[in-house]
Length: 122
View 1 (cartoon, rainbow, N blue to C red):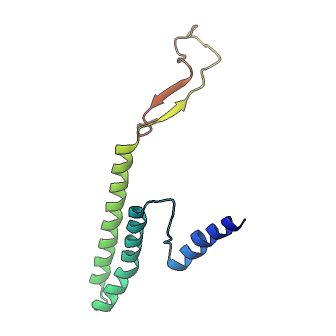
View 2: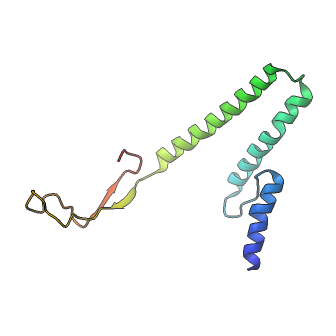
């Protein structure tokens, strides 16, 4: 009970207070540091623009462009890593009980288990 309460406080309340960042002990140091730096950038960048430059529509456009470029970069890296490291999943197919017009076991597979790439269509 105490462990769950501590985890809710750390992941729920602390993340809400800090704007979404918390230290995740299940991740390695690199991942936690990367998340911290991204969070700091997203927090400090608008404040820095506001304090350093006169607020105009050009600055708003620059801000939106930088955030869009960062979002696109993170999504592209995420997609590439998932595509490169995903080795596929074992998908179980149930053999049809009714033979239908085929009349044999031509359409049934060995044990009902096939391995296929989870990135592909279907």
